[in-house]
Length: 160
Image (cartoon, rainbow, N blue to C red):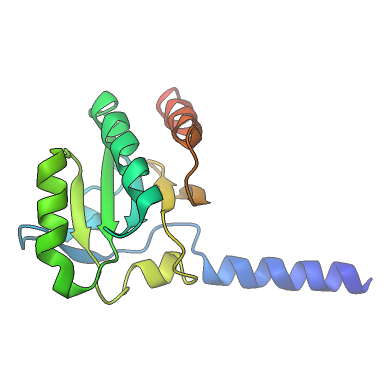
């Protein structure tokens, strides 16, 4: 009985901390323009990845997400949200341009958005949002091959 009560309490806590649908938010892109999630929400499948320039696993995943985003460009948008401090903005822009990434890079130096979805702050942290504006996949970390799980989820969502 105690285990049941604890389990129910944990589920209630998790559902209150992690929203099942994506709330509206706006962040600046690396070129300074304002990006609002509401402009793309429900129009394409959204892959959001929280990362930082100092994070080696993040860099490996970004390359894979760029490839995936390009492969499914008509159905998917990739948003790479940098959690670097504002003093690193020049480094972020240089890093992204040197690799010719095709995804949208957003800046979240005060963790106003990443704190909502990833309160522990562990990166990389990846989410997939379906066309119904629901968060259908989350994952923390990166190991080679993980991108296959993301790809499988995207295929599952685009086949419907």
